[in-house]
Image (cartoon, rainbow, N blue to C red; front, side, top):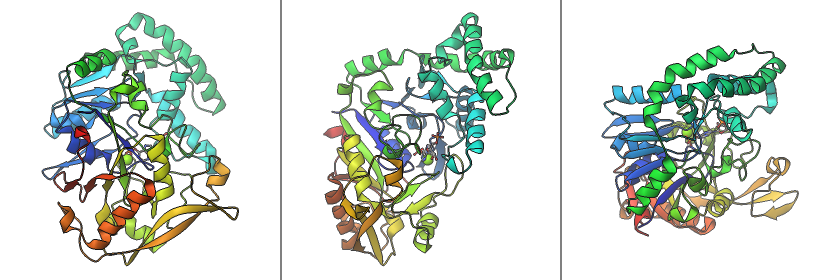
Length: 429
Ligand code: IMO
Ligand code: MG
């Protein structure tokens, strides 16, 4: 019986929400370990759609849900999300949700800085979600962040705010923004504190206890391995480690707590925001994938860039995340294509390579080498068994497995949880 980590294997939006929801039925605890409310996880249960950004998907199934220390937490976004769920009939209480006391907080000044920087970057903009994720992680690493536990000690909080503002007001002056006074920040935090403090807990110790009791822990990754601050397409990445190893650091468990790594992977490729995308299709194919796949951001509503499956990238993220099985999603979006292309390698300066080069300059110049697979006319949407799939679709899946060097453990054929074909149960490996 293994604890399972679910991570994105591309640039995010692979369909992690549905898969985590599918797995959470078998789990006792669901843990978020990085990122913040830049994530957009969609769950469809009995025809009702739930959109989560910050809360672990387990809240919808009333599983113990945990926000680990690796997450950057916007307390206002948290309260708003809890309220939204309440309107949908889901109750989130301190019995069902725990947040690490050493979690870094996102304040309004972080999102303001995020947006101002993007605006002043012109062509060099990253295309962030504007949620303050990067600036909050900077303050964490800069050792000046306000953390959840600081809200419980209002005496000490003032000093921390002063320290934080010395840094931020200098930045704001440079960017031509109005300076902030400490009182505003303090009043804001003092007001929200009683709403979030009841969820505070020592998460490392809670999870250690659960683990000793033999409970099943499901780690819910946000974003994807190609948005990882170290292993992604830097600087066009998010500001956290999104690879599976972060599940340990971001929750306070040792790496041996992770039993199985499930990588979520779309049957084609999408990306939101700027940055290299070798197989991007700026043509009718890309438009068709976007329309059929409803490729619009959950968080920002931006249209996603679309392209063919890139086996080079996924082969690499299988390695950097230690992925043992793939959950392949949205295969049905390829229904009706006469032919489907798969990128198997790149050409760089006349040379063939089988990996994504590390430098931004090289990444922007690689040209994909494609092989062509035969398409299918049949509808694979909502298929619930392997036998319901046309031969060409099976061949496509098998070829992907071969190229990325990893088996497909789950196949998802619609946003509904029942439309899932299981080959290997991640919890039972
Ligand atoms: P889920 O969990 C797709 C992208 C942004 C931008 C870059 C940096 O739904 O898969 P940030 O606001 O994080 O500093 O933006 O990362 N990005 C995502 N793209 N899915 C996500 O989350 C993302 N979260 C951030 O578009 O390019
Ligand atoms: Mg998303």
